[in-house]
Every structure is written in C-alpha cells, then in structure tokens.
Amino acid sequence: MNVDSILRSKGNAVEYVAPDLSVYDVCSRLYEIGVGALVISRDGQRIDGIVSERDVIRLIARSGADVLDRPVSDIMVRDVVTCTRGDDVVALMEVMTDRRIRHLPVVEDGALVGIVSIGDLVKRRIRESEQEATALREYIATG
Image (tube, rainbow, N blue to C red; front, side, top):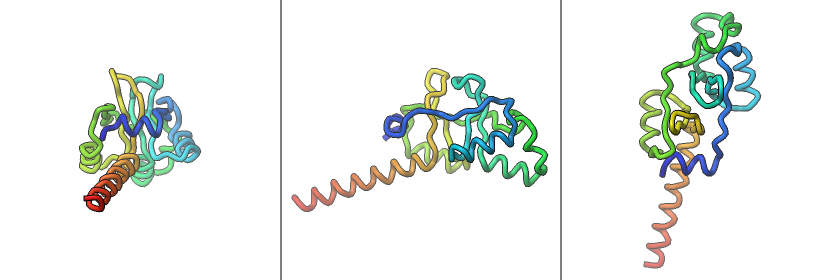
C-alpha cells in the first residue's frame, strides 16, 4: 500500500498560499477550508515551505499576537519533509511519528502533486487491516 493509492481515492488537489500572505490570512484560510496545514508556494508547483496550525499557535504563545501581521514566509518551515507516490504508507507513518509532523506534500519530478495527512495514512491502514481480517475470516469459514 502506497501514497498513490491514497491520492487516487482522495484526489491530488493541494491548497497552497503565497509566501507574502499574512499569518492572519493564512489562519483564516486554514479555518475556511478546514485543514491543518498549508503548503507555501509562489506557483503551486515548487514548495517554498509549509505552515501548520501548531506552528502558528506555538509562535503566538512564544512571541505574541503581533506575529499575525507578519508574512507567512517569516514563520514557515522551510526544510519540508516530502514523500513520493510510491512511498509505503506504514513507513511514512513512522517518519511522521518520529518527526512529529502531520502533513507530507507529495512530490514527483520536483513538482507538488498532492498532500497526505497522518489521518489519511491511518484511515488507509485501518481499511487495509479490516480487509485482511475479512479475508482471513472467510478463509477460515470455508476452510
């Protein structure tokens, strides 16, 4: 089971914002579309960074609400961990747990082609486990 199987079912649309957008406007966009992170990109192809709700909350707690007026490029994570369509879901779950991140942009030939969240990976893994259990029960019942 790999990332491509998730993108085929959920789609590969990626919400992104420009690096000059204010942190406040990014927060509004996160709320509006109901996601936990946004890719920061000038063109929707090349990743400049990523920002999550957690990043914003931590910065406000540390530096105060004035950060909301700054451009998101000032606070975005620049060293973005990415994955590819062929990456294994279980391996990525480990990476995300170890790195304490919840969103992975999917990159192909240097271009942004999707994004997966820890929720997407867990949901896919649960579905796979349920299918395996069903197959085993059927095998035992007919065995």
